[in-house]
Each structure stands twice: as C-alpha cells, then as structure tokens.
Length: 359
Ligand SMILES: C[S@@+](CC[C@H](N)C(=O)[O-])C[C@H]1O[C@@H](n2cnc3c(N)ncnc32)[C@H](O)[C@@H]1O
Image 1 (cartoon, rainbow, N blue to C red):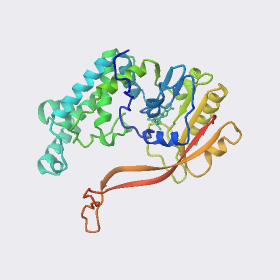
Image 2: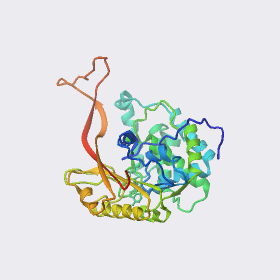
Image 3: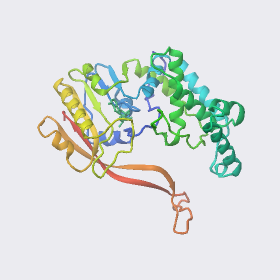
Image 4: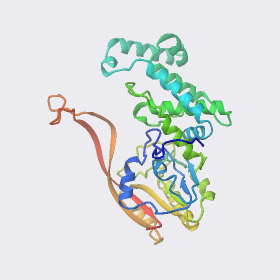
C-alpha cells in the first residue's frame, strides 16, 4: 500500500459512465438510503463505482467485492491494484502525446483544410491502404488519428490471460479512450467492442489525476475484483454485508433505456436481479436495489410478497445528449442576464426506485 497520502483525499470516479450514480448519491443520502453500518461492501454492477467511492471504507469488515461484466473496464482496476506506477506512467504517456497535438476547435472543424484531411484519413482507412498507426505515423499526425490508433490497438488485442505488461497497456488504453471519446459513452458495434468515435478533441487540461489513482490503489488493496456475471458473486455475500445493486435500467413501455452495455435489460433480466436481491436477503445481507420506475409498479408488484423490503421513490432528471447552445427564433444564441450563453439540454423528468430490506 502507498502511504503518506493526504488523509482527506477521497477517491473520485475515474471516467464518465452511462448510468453512473454520482449525481444520485446526495439524493440517496437525503432519504437515508445507505445502511448505518455493515460488514463488507459488494457492488456486482460496478460501472464507474460512484457509490463505492463514498462507501468503500465504511464497512466494519473493510473488505470490498466489486464486479462488472465489462472485463475491459475492470481491467483498469486490476492494473491500478497490481501495477499502479506502470499504469500511471502508461496513461500519462498517452495523455502527453494526445495533449501535445494541437486542440481542434469548432472553427477548425468547419475549415475546408480540416475536412479534406479528415476525408483523406478515413478513405485511406476504409479502403485498407493504411492502418491508423500508419496514418498517424506517416500522414496525418493529430488528436483524431492518435485516438483511432489507440482504439485499433485496444480492439485488436486479446487480453484474456495476458502477462501484466499487456494488461497495463490495455487498461491505460481504455482509460485514455473513455476519457477522450465522444460523450464518454461506451458503445459496442456488431463488429467490435468499443466503437465510440473520438470526442471533441478540445481538452486543454490533463485528465490523468495521479493522486486520485494512487488513492484508488489504496482502496483496491482491500477490494476483490471480478469481471463476470453478477450472479457468480453471490458466494461472497455474508451476514451483515451491504450489497448495492445497480443493474442496467429497466426499459418500460414508454421509457427506453439509453445505456447500452451489451446485455439485455428486459423484464426477464430484471426479475433475475430481483431473485439475486432475495438471495442476498436470505444470506442476512443488507440489500439496496436501484432502478428506474417506469410508472407501472413493476418493482412494487415484484416485492409484494416480501414485506421485509421497503420501496422509496426519488424524482430526478435525465439529461439526454450533448448540451447545445440555445437559439432564439432568428437563430441567434440566447444569453442570460450575466451574458453567459444558455445551453439547451433535453431534460427528461424521471423517477428512480430504491428498494431495501433495512430501514
Ligand atoms: C447502471 S450501470 C452501473 C453504474 C454504477 N453503479 C456507477 O455508479 O458507475 C450498470 C452496469 O452493469 C453492468 N452489467 C450489465 N450486465 C451485467 C451482468 N450480467 N453482470 C454484471 N454486470 C453487468 C454494465 O456493464 C454496467 O456497467
């Protein structure tokens, strides 16, 4: 374990993640959703681990179990746990190479020169004349070609059962990609995993927070990491433990889920998660299940026969897509009284459901 870190440093999530609960934590705390005490901490649908960042050191047993079926993101935590300095160095190298290429501003993107260069890059790639690595090394050296070079390397590797050097490379590649991709969202295509295009390419500041990564290393020294199906984690659950279940959102009749983790999030899946919650309850663990309420009492009905579970609802908003500049009827940007440009986000009102077997 690395010592001498500032005592008040808290772990912060390492990347944006669809469905991450960063903004929900305060709302959960407002309804006292988390247990006052528990033995070990479990998070079988880890994502970016927003709740873990607050609660990993609150248990009496001080043992944590984290899992997500996305083995690539869990590889980031494995690398930080086992090879933190190699990981930091590798991530910093990627960051430096990316940031040392010029920023791409909106104006540049609309210039003919940029459009022509971009078209040439993509034609070379599509017709198989050059790989992204060759494009980056010999033709068009820039943030965009660097991103695609790293993305290709990441997608071509088979990281199962690989030595730690490759594991660190994979972990720092995906850490770099999630921090520079479009909207920070993981997308899979039918042909390959991680097909998210490059992001805005206008970052000016560093995104590798070394102090935070070292703090993660400390937290992970008390944490068991796995990357399988959540059901396989039941054996770790014991009496008095806290299990935070945050599966992919349920899609209702009128509400579709926008996070695509490559798994089904239909009602069969949700019923299995409920079964898992009941199994944790039988093991005398404290369970908290979070999901979206689609207005059809799905969860209320599912837990009807289990009075030890209580249900609470929290009103919230989901922001869809990227914020654009709000325009008036003449197409001019709208400014507020302080002269700031007003952003026009598509906000959808929603209700979250929180189900627990403790008060
Ligand atoms: C709503 S997100 C969790 C977000 C997380 N609580 C946070 O705050 O960052 C749901 C997660 O479940 C994972 N997942 C989907 N199906 C799974 C399965 N069968 N077993 C384990 N994890 C799964 C997805 O990869 C995704 O990261």
